[in-house]
Length: 263
Ligand SMILES: [Zn+2]
Picture 1 (cartoon, helix red, strand yellow):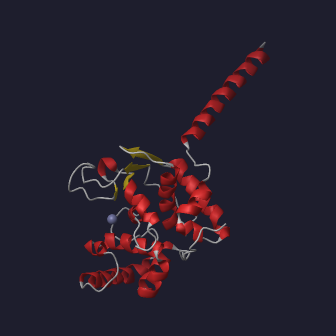
Picture 2 (cartoon, helix red, strand yellow; picture 1 turned 135 degrees about the vertical axis):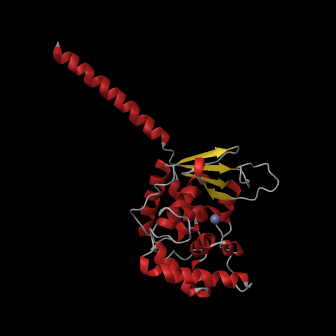
Picture 3 (cartoon, protein in one colour; picture 1 turned 180 degrees about the vertical axis):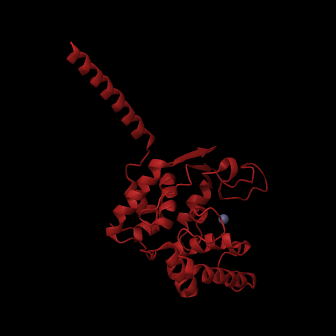
């Protein structure tokens, strides 16, 4: 009799546990053909050495399994989810153990929004932001800007990568353009000097770096990172010292472009 009751309890426990597992898996929406979509849409992934692709894919899946991506007033598909995840993984690909501990949610708006997250406001011109206060641990991205960042391959701009670089910058507590969590102390001063020199060049209209980078050292870091990941070849030839510094900060040499999708 006791054996029978015990057996019953084990069965119930197993059932509850299995249901829990099912729920957990259902919450993780990993697109079936992740590798195929990344290969087609993400030039960085396509250009990676074959040996590095499985790790990139693993990190994309890891990100998607712990981060909610929610459309607000719009719809998103598997490609959008993967573009968000790729934007997260690209800046940290040189740090295999790194995870974004300061992010739980990415909210996707259809297009531009204003400081109050209003999409209808006429002077809304924000394409992406890392939230603070009640929006802490949340990132907001414009779907149009997310897609544009990966479809235009020559403009040195990528809004989603820009926002994830702000998150990396924020990991040490301060969003100040100095990623203390990534950059060894001895490089802090040379990095600050270089930022100021490059900002002066932008202000003197003697630079091909996005002028938005001159608004603060925080924005300079994010804008320079977009350039680094989008057009590493061009950054290396036009701004060799900045390129070298970016390699140190991000612990990686971004893959140079493979123009066509490999068969
Ligand atoms: Zn910014």
